[in-house]
Image (cartoon, rainbow, N blue to C red; front, side):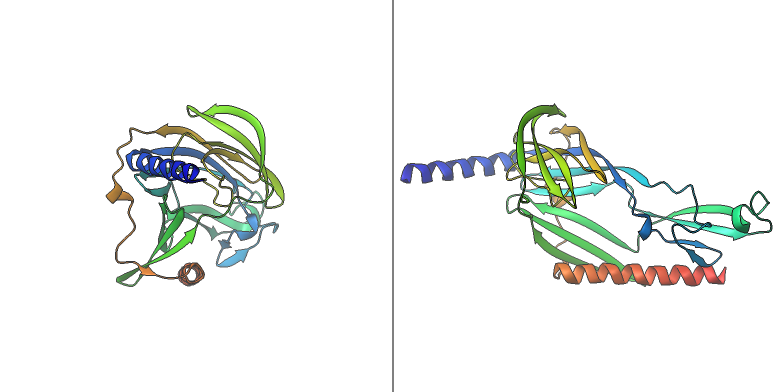
Length: 272
């Protein structure tokens, strides 16, 4: 029993040492289906719901983007490309379908990319298996920074190993299937990196890094694992002065910032 305990301590020490020495980044290509019921389209100051004849037919129902995990020592940070929101406006004009105003009398379309009314960053404490989510909310001339901690979720029930393996981004990965959100997801993960991580929080393996995961509504696949990338621990550390709140409070702050933003946008559209 003592020999086994010593072996476990030795293994934990080796893993911690490896984590302290490991630096790099994982780049994922990602695809997610857009929940059209959550889309907000305003035409001439009026909200148009999906399924309406006036709802634009050229809004894609799938979005693709790139996301990265940066890691150095025991710390990590998620970086998602994009993250802005698309504001689409129509200028009213004469005519019906085929007329100068376009379908339903709509005029020329204008697309504007704008940033969210808050900045959100996700850091990871890899040794203690925790997420640290920071929310920076700007109100007038002041910016407040809030932080909430959340432990890694447990490996979900129904996680089933298939026994199959394949290489992804140069790493041998094991295949597993798991029920999630009413369907079966396929997960490929490697144990050749000294920490655990998944681009989908709910689908983290008992030990290992997910390099590919696919379901009917979303998919992530690692295109590169770069252990030579220049990543400094100071660049992936959360802000020292952030106010600590609960996950529920952080979500309330996020929702309030979005509601205030939408209200301001509607007022501006009505004035125009």
